[in-house]
Each structure stands twice: as C-alpha cells, then as structure tokens.
Length: 227
Ligand SMILES: [Ca+2]
Ligand SMILES: [Ca+2]
Ligand SMILES: [Ca+2]
Image (cartoon, rainbow, N blue to C red; front, side, top):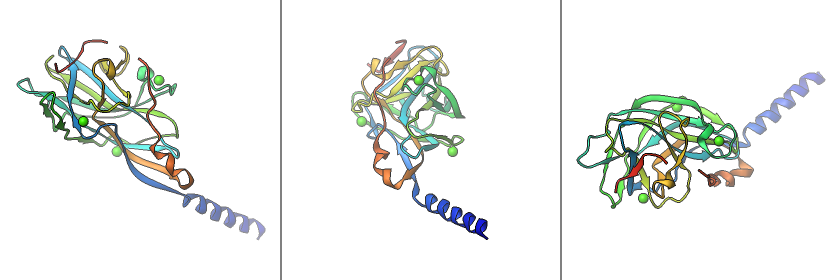
C-alpha cells in the first residue's frame, strides 16, 4: 500500500512539472519584412546561405524554414531553381557554421521570388519549407536556410535586410560549409530574410529569456551585391 501511494505521489509530481511549462509557437527572424539588397554567386553554381539562431531556455524544436528569395530585374529568374531547405547544428557551439552538421532538410525549389528594385525596399514574400522537425537544447546554436543552384552568375537569390545588424548571416560556395564560411557582412551589411519556425518549451519562471538570441560571430569569395 505504501508503494502504491509513492507511485501515485510521483505521478502527481510529474504532472505538476509538466504543467509548469508551456509550448509556444515561435518564429525567429532578424529582418523587418523588407529587403534592400540581393546577393548571389557571380558565376553559375551552388550557394549555401543561412541565419544563426540560438535555442532559448527550455529548448526549441525547428519545424519549418521560411525564405524570401531575391532576384534581379531583366535576368534569368531564380523562381523554380533547385533549392534544398536545410537545418544545421553547431557541434562546438561557437556560432560559426564552419563545422555545421546537417540535421534536417527538404528538397524543393525556390518560390515566391521578388525582384529587387535596389536601392529601394521590397517586401519579401516568404516561402515556407516544412522540414522534418529537429529539437535543440537550451543555448544551442543552429543554422537555418538552404542550398540553391544558380543557372546564371547574374542571379542574386539571397535577399538582405540592410537595416538588420545582428551579424548572424553566413554564406558559402557549394553545398554546406566545407569550402569555407563567408559572413554576409563581408559582402553587405545586413541579414538574410530567413526565418526559423518552431516550438519553444518555456519554463514559466524563465519565460523572459525567450528573447535572448543571436551572438556576434567572426569570420570572401565570389559573392557580389547587386551594385
Ligand atoms: Ca528592411
Ligand atoms: Ca516540420
Ligand atoms: Ca561552430
């Protein structure tokens, strides 16, 4: 009888713990919804471009990735180009994707591409890619974005919010970061219009920590902005 009571008491404790946290739908982003520049490779090829975010207290499950693609008027459109939405972990958690490891992805195409009217602002139209969910523990950095194939060196698929100063956007030539990391700020100051959508488990006592993300990082290639 005593044992049964203990089990019941444990169950009650677990229930209490479970209800002491809440799961909130959260979107991480750096952009204000508009882009003022576009960036891409200067010759046909494959470009990886990502934003870095950090899982808040309680952890974060990334469920989908949203990207607003850019384009250049009068050039071959990037709409429909091969694009793989990709989620990477940061094994040494130093904020640099030099060691990024792919943990989830979805093969698709570039969609909703909007043409730049540099230097004016253009409202980004986000395409959302429902990748297999992947969860990160509190404080873990992760990188969201993807890999796009340019058929022309005049395309600029990465749209940049030049008023964003989070210094947490990166690019690389090729698929992944094996060939080296280029901080976007080496090309143009700003951050990509790339967002991470998911669920944050927020301990109620620490709910205020949810806004704490994005740490500065350190870090050339054939990237070029529009002008
Ligand atoms: Ca903007
Ligand atoms: Ca998903
Ligand atoms: Ca790293």
